[in-house]
Length: 342
Image (cartoon, rainbow, N blue to C red; front, side):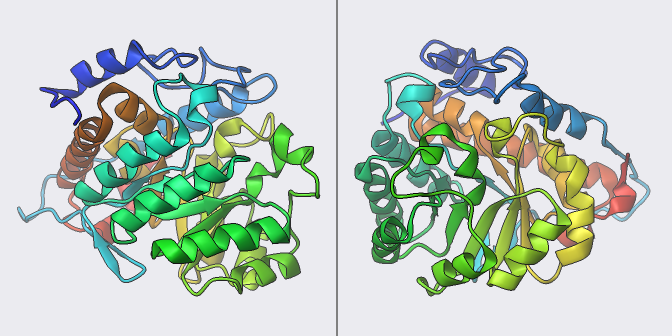
């Protein structure tokens, strides 16, 4: 059982003691961990993670309190389910290698997945070379009645089929593939070949499952259109936290044009440098349907297990609700581009 924290500050302080390669910075902006892989940092000169964070800071929210006082509703309906908030825990794998050995992927997901489900959201889980990673993730999702989304890496078709069998057995409400993981060194060297997928290959993969399929790693209108053509139900605008391609644009920079091109055709998620409920509000105003947040949830698990996850969700939810109230939005659908300034 996790520790019950009085406040988020205490959670962060506790996490900082056991995060290993992560510094647990007061502001998680990619500066201190640039070019640290293994570790939580970005690839190459490491400026993509920094750019992700900075791009959200250039978007400002516009206050408007001259409006009727109404109850604020942060609920999101997605894939036939209702969630308390429009943000979810992003997929993270190989936590023992990139952070510390306090957790491995199986024990990490055993805290993250139920912690999210009990807080009214869900967790995307990661994947890895070790078959136990996906098995542990899907077991955790099954224990939560399918409230979770496994993320399968772009392996060869034989491995994908094996992992999709685990996904089906878990009863997961959807499945994702982080195609952007093609830029990870271990995937580049994988035999038989793994990595990027053509539209036809993606169609074949999507046909293996009967739940909504999410393609993660979209950074252009061209990529978004191809994902839709392949039959994806949703996309994640993501550069993998800067870990797969150096000097990439920030997700906040490309989100509006992608939303304009495929919004309404597929659900749109976005990740990368989103750290607060205010950032979540900005992402929705730029065209996202929902948001993924990864590194802060790692800190939450390392700092307090399931209770740490609940602490973070409460913090983010309160910040989002406050921003909506101050900008005159009573529901998520009322959040518009007029409520931000770029």
